[in-house]
Image (cartoon, rainbow, N blue to C red; front, side, top):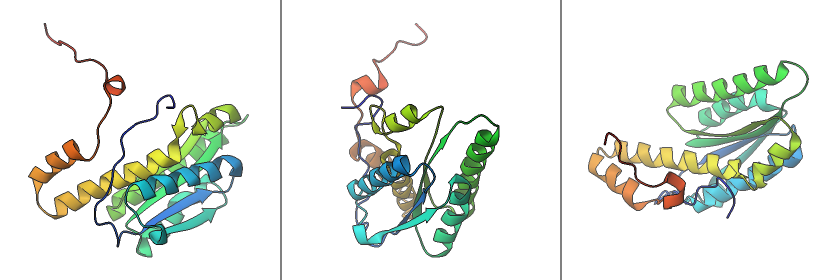
Length: 188
């Protein structure tokens, strides 16, 4: 088991008609191809059918939000954004990171559709490698699973069945004790 990797899997039942777009930056392609593979694995584990996953490569992280928006306009129910921004010697890093994150957040709020954000922002190539299948897991997989979880919540709310939201939380994933720690006696 890898360090800092969740051991739960979210699964969307009856997901046969759910369409998901994976938008991948081609910059730092060795890393982003691994993130894309992780995203596919996360979606398949989450119940999304392979033929309902679309791929949209873009030049860099700055182009991800618009590609996600276009995917939503084209009928995607969710998106997974994967990219890799490695700090350089200029402030360009901050501009790219902030724009990619803010753009994806704005698009998901505008369309009320989830964007699993798997754009990693690292200090160096080693950190990027560790977050794209190394000891820190695969952030593409985790981003896909985040999108699946929001689709679950959205489905539950659209069915107006708030009781099943609680049941969904109890039944569709579990966390090992080492993930959340021992209970604490606060206030004693």
